[in-house]
Image (cartoon, rainbow, N blue to C red; front, side, top):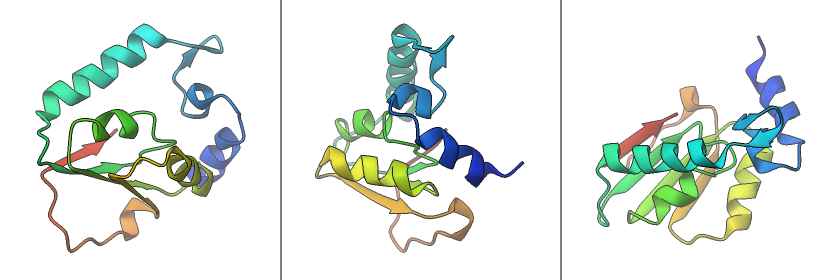
Length: 116
């Protein structure tokens, strides 16, 4: 399967939840999405001083929530439209990178890594 082509096609949808497949029968599942975000934040044990790496971040729906609980989030995805959407959020502690995770190299150390 060509994942880049798949996600490029999904990114064309105007509905953010549909873009990243967080729907059921075409409708956002708010209860599950809220539970998922809380679960991730709890299990990462985020602290305000943490620098996080969010791999395959998609359009940043989880990234923006993580950013509320830590110092910085480095968000990485290979779909340019998703990365542009994260940039449009204008959240100062999110740095977004359009890269394939196989090709990234950071000299920075991260306190927490999310690969979801």
